[in-house]
Image (cartoon, rainbow, N blue to C red):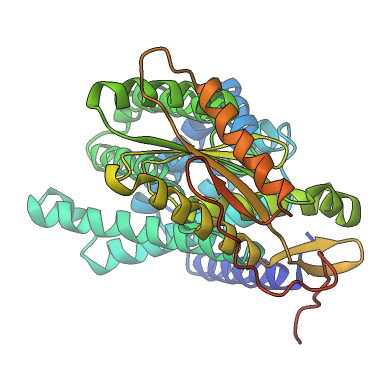
Length: 432
């Protein structure tokens, strides 16, 4: 943890100190009762059994889902938050997450400080949900039709909001250029988390009738867990781990489908091939970790300058490829050039902060060369043929001095470059 930037350490310490303080306060006011203690033991045992049954699935998910991970143990922690006094609820969560550490997180070699912070966010989310339940009249209100759904829904949203915002805060301070999807997760991940919370809410509701209903939750949780694992595996198989873009194999498959679709619909299709200029110098000067950060920043810039239905992929090394369907027929080449030029200009403005053994620095003065072509949608056209044409234009751009755009069928227009600094890569120390 101490190797992290100071701003990250500050957030971790504050969040965990607040958690410890609130837990201590809850235990100072705790008055033990047989019923709540039995329920706490039951939920902790259920969480442990769930972990054991799904240990293989969880470890596989951890290996393929390092950037974003949906924790289905929320079913048990959220139920504890809704039904138990604060002291017992926090104790139940600590037991479950301690067991998760030894059986799932530690074997997957995840840092202990990250697990501790995650546990703290869950504890604070549970306390927030408890406060909402208490403020809305307790569990007795849950049987009051729409009013009961509203109060239970408010507790669910409180739990989700506190947990998500705290995690987003940690991501934001550790990765200042993080996108909203990095901060809060992709839409399908948010949906799975809400589904897990709803399952926990329904379990809490049924447990007010009988503790035996806990047995009915295991099958839905395990089915949901396997469904999420398949989603993670599918995403890992098609997503480049360094940039978040499509892999070359996945991009090729989707591009083949796009060519066939463009033929059926008699629509246009265009392609760009892009290569980051002098990328080897970044790796040689600052190391491969810094190079990976640069690739990720370029990928984000590329994605930001194209449409949501354009196919963006990493083709290996520092080369990227984009397929653009449905450009206006009358001005398709001009539109393609405009997109390529926007990407080129955006890359030249990038300033990528990285941590190095010599301290923090910013990598700038990046540039990219772009080649593009309209793709024939005639029967028999292959992705490889289209890439070859775009690649030829890319080499024309590089031969012209790099940091340039060349589009097949468009007269060469000199690229408007800003005045280049004497150094292509410079260190910029952060301001105090």
